Length: 109
Image (tube, rainbow, N blue to C red; front, top):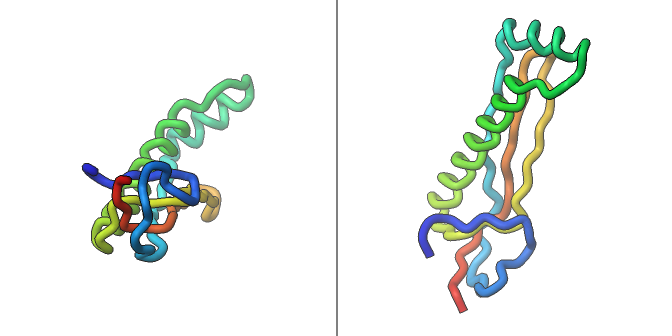
């Protein structure tokens, strides 16, 4: 198995979980620049996707996932089960993105 397998399920089909290594997190906080806030405000008047915000959130999710994988590997895991994202607003300009799950050691059946 190359890399870390990440699944949203509580099991890993085709694998046996040998050891649960504990919860793992990847966290990032993103700030919106004033230009994107003004642009988003104007765009929201006419409707449609806020592409700059979408791009920022997608990059934040990737960073959070990368940090989760690094923490899982540091624990000796080769998989993460029950993977989830959580986001929250910190004030009016910051968004926290947290990736979390359970790090496990699994072997292919």
